[in-house]
Image (cartoon, rainbow, N blue to C red; front, top):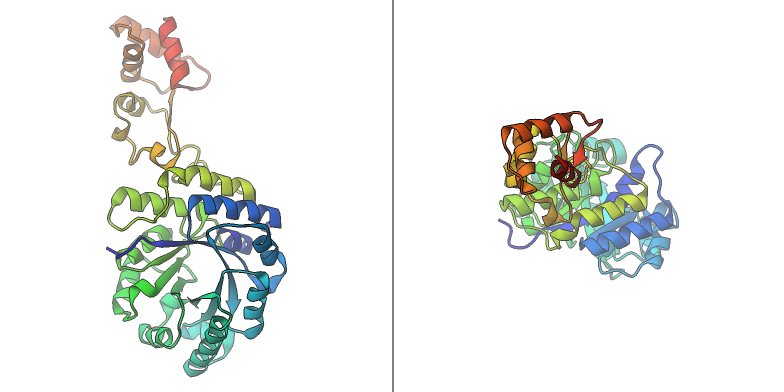
Length: 362
């Protein structure tokens, strides 16, 4: 296990805008930053300062403990724009894999190393905290990445799975082959293969210190590591160290971010979806009236959520019997059958309180 709690950098505001047709107003980002600050994430990536004035507007409008970051290409004008925007952290990025390095920059390894080194040095001279992100880092030769990382001085060195092509097995193998101190490392995953959270947990199990996350997984293409999935998995599995935030605020603050940005998640979305803590199946509701853990991996209340049990057309004798017991009635066969018939005649299922009222009226 890592020596310290994982550090979280939220990328919702930037990655969310990289989707086709998506954009956020300054006010939306300000509200989202405040909600993320309330949640307790360590860093919030506001945007790309060179692209316009909005990053500076957000920085001017908030007074938060979380550190605000802006990304910058390995060029002087991007660093200058980040400084002018008033961010706390300059996150310099450059493509490091052979394919992206040659296709996007047309530079050899020595030229890239020189470019990154000069830009990171210039960013450090501003007095701001500096991070470096290796684009397509997980498709970069580990030996080259070690040499590049060893040549620069940055608070965190982030390895990005830019195209979302890696699985936990490959992440584990890659980190095993890397000699850089893992407590200096961060990871940035995309969910194209549906394993972004698993990849992040694997990285933290290898002592990687920083994880890039987003609320609801919102981000380019298939999105990024959902902060709610990562936090809940770390809290419940106890296989890796947990982030230093109050888990009981997770769901409310995540919903605040979604509301602020005008975003939504599918009803079946893990942790945040409206259906994930709702149950109607007769077998499930009957058992969960006695012990919710029978069919839930964790108590949603531990993360600021709540469950709802529904009774109706799918309800059976077990659920009816427990409802009658709850209202202090004798659940004989006649009453159980009558309650089942009444519940199954409903046009739509009803929550527990209404089902108990029906049981009382029998």
